[in-house]
Image (cartoon, rainbow, N blue to C red):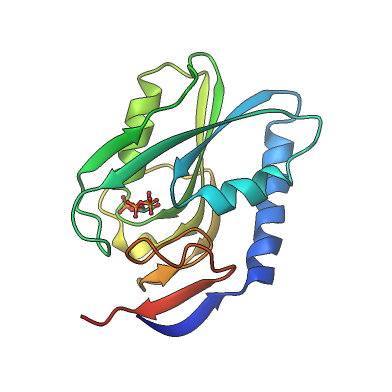
Length: 176
Ligand code: PRP
């Protein structure tokens, strides 16, 4: 793997996360929220975002784990549920948090799955939006950055299971 360029330095991501948290704090003021983080990619974003939420907000945290079949670089469109939520979301205000939306197939699958469980409300927060690759329309309520169609790693995102720990988002080239 060759690191081509740091697209989003850690400081820029940090500022954006604070900005998103401010919006969420305003929108959810006086309400309860169940944050659903999508593993594995969203683990860093969820951890940072939650620490900027209003201390008085009643925040619950749950995780769901999904994976798309196929090779590591491109989503195949088939989504597999690896780990379900631990708590019911019926009647809850759910905020689904994802690291990246690419084709939209994963979020589409998750939104259908969660809406079927009758939450009071379901909103979606993504850090990275690779908009040019979308094949299915998904409603996004909070978007960090719209990024170009490059292969990106870091801040939770992996390449063959590695590089999730990088504090920045980098565009990489994967050599065969
Ligand atoms: C990545 C990412 C999203 C999905 C987006 O997950 O975290 O869940 O792909 O792609 P899509 O919009 O084309 O569906 P991945 O399957 O790589 O699993 P991971 O989160 O465990 O890295």
